[in-house]
Image 1 (cartoon, rainbow, N blue to C red):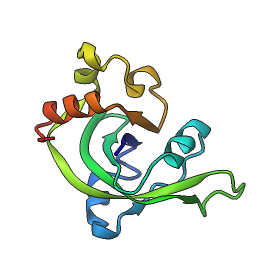
Image 2 (cartoon, rainbow, N blue to C red):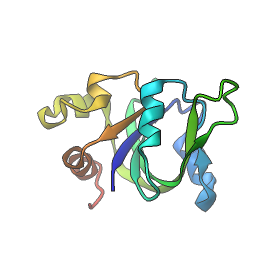
Image 3 (tube, rainbow, N blue to C red):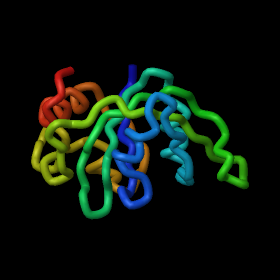
Length: 139
């Protein structure tokens, strides 16, 4: 299993919106960055990801699961980009802020810190476990 981070503006798509989609999940569409798209191509069904509210909140608020692997994004007229479908798994009892992540030296190499504009990024296993612990989620 691999781990990921999905960034979204809560005004456009929030954790509450994701939860309301239930078991059928929601397509993670609209990605127009080649690196983020390649990250989604690497995802497999069952992979987990952090759901990150960007803009004003800047915090990880929940965990999602990939339920459908990469396929064409119908919102992309060029045909170059795809999407995955994710479903909400659980909220973080204690959302983890970007400030907390940046303050933790063991998380200094995270893509969220190094490539702050990347909307879909990998998370290594040790960082996943540490953030889950910080957020009050048992691994």
